[in-house]
Length: 106
Image 1 (cartoon, helix red, strand yellow):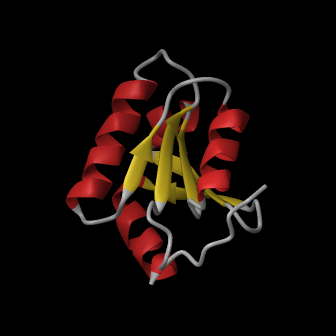
Image 2 (cartoon, rainbow, N blue to C red; image 1 turned 60 degrees about the horizontal axis):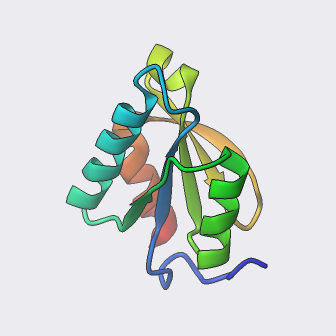
């Protein structure tokens, strides 16, 4: 079950997830999470369990966007942003993430 709140009404706007708990991904994901929070974007950090389950938990809570830190993040500084409603996934540069989200959250 998905709680389909409009992004502007959702209590959490993003969930930030490292793909795996190694290779510096958790540390990078935690930095992204803290940066979003400093910028006033309500965010939740989760590294427990499989990535699909983490997405699903946030879908159930109504969180509109999931952000995944993966190998490409470490290579080129982009993250995967997943839309809860469409399941569409796009790559976004870390330094453009807050702007990308703000434009969609409203």
